[in-house]
Length: 110
Image (tube, rainbow, N blue to C red):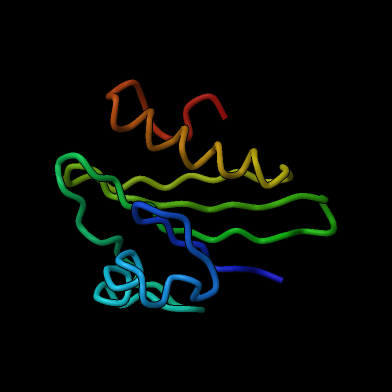
């Protein structure tokens, strides 16, 4: 059972964002439950917008996360698999920090 996960200044899943500022931004982008546009929305100089999926796999077992973002005109994609939920969330944050700090790519060291 997969869940579409979208992050935009907050963590949201399964249309739990309806009526919030984050929700309005995501709806304006064209994102919704079961659908998000193929291109990430533009980010401002100090903001990274990450979109992706988080699916549970019984066969691994563990979560499979696939993320993508655009930062200062460049597109990035990375992911993680066979991990617990907290490790998947850390992988999103780690990827954004690596790119935004100029240290490396989000999949560096995986």
